[in-house]
Image (cartoon, rainbow, N blue to C red; front, side, top):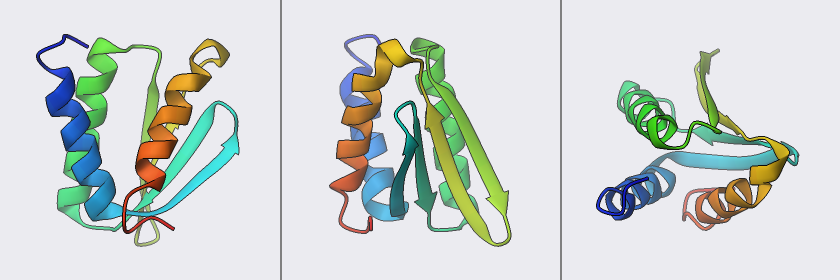
Length: 99
């Protein structure tokens, strides 16, 4: 991500994590699931951030799922980018609302 945009995007992800993450789950090394508080605003924020992040770092695959009154953002990466997912999990897991 371009240097000028990186701090802003990190801050936006941190805000989403702090305000919306209910649980952080790592089903396998290359896949992270974030259960979010279900609101249309959180769905829109997650989708917009995922789209911008994928625009600069195409190795990410983001899947936003809305089902049964729940909202989840799943992030997958190829094996050579596991350390990036580790860092994302650490940030999301440090959020006050995460379980």
